Amino acid sequence: MRIVHIITRLLRAGADENTTLTCNGQAEAGHEVWLIHGHDYLDEAVERVDPRVKVLCADRLMHPVDLPNDWRALWQIRAMLRDIGPDVVHTHTSKAGIVGRAAARLLPAPRPQILHGVHILPFVNVSPGKARFYRGLEAAVAPFTDAYIAVSEGMRSENLAAGLGRDENNFVVASGMDIDTFRQADAPADLPPHDGLIVMIATLETRKRHHEFLPVMAEVVKEHPRALLALLGEGRERAALEAQARDLGIADNVLFLGFRDDAPSWIAASDLCVLPSEREGLPRVGVQYVAGGKPVVITALPGIEAIVRDGENGFVVPIDDVAAMKEPVLRLLSDPELKARMGAASRQINVDRWAAPQMVAEIETIMKQVAATRRAAA
Image (cartoon, rainbow, N blue to C red; front, side, top):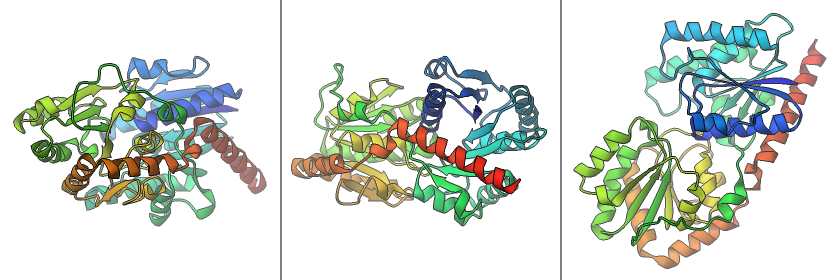
């Protein structure tokens, strides 16, 4: 089949890695695969794409909402799709999901399958005005979305509750990764001395709530002066976060490491891992923390119970109360027995369904099911 994936940005965030692994797996399986990304991308992210995948840049496709430019992106992507003649168009992330599905719908017959990957829902945990706006956009493209592929049961439930699709065309496929690299990693060679290492892997953007977690870290440092917070990720908030760490007096306790290829090693070295995000699908880094056998302190994201059981292998705090992370972080740093017990509990959780080959195989099954449904309806 000729399969086109469309994503807003190609950086090194979770949805980007999920999409890249899907493209690579489908190319390995013998499909003709294209990956269309928007204006924002990293060369190193493009280099991770299999050479058999044809990578195209739709430079009009940009992350912020800009209706005149979004209109131009729609027609730019439609032209790309018309030239390719795909059998399947699989969109990822909110902006590419709206624009890409609309562009696919505007193609002449025979129309390709239109699939949308629900990595995150833009109308969850936002202001009422934004929620109405994004629900309206999603409702507009829902009638010609053949299948939704959510990364967790929680995302699927939220999608259905919003009236998007039907039970029979909302699927769940775990976001694939190389699980074994997190199970088998050793600590990094450049690890500085510390008396407690907290790891957070996340793009430096506001919805990840680094800004809200840094005051928690300042409180932790009062009891553990040599504790370290390792931030793995890059993004537009970096300068502001560095300034905030200085203002809080914890600049020496916060490591801004950028994107790291040795993220599994930092997880292996950690005492615990955190993620205070306000909006996610089922976060890939949560799975990675668990695969690495670490206690996890995380917000109550939809579907998080699949990997973090509150009080067993970590602590789940209310999604609107990042400050509540302080107590469990301090407990884990102060209680080696609790830390060891929760780490062992993480290692007992089966995360095999997040293996990349499993993800690719399940998406293949969905494409075949959609094709059969369309043939039966013809």
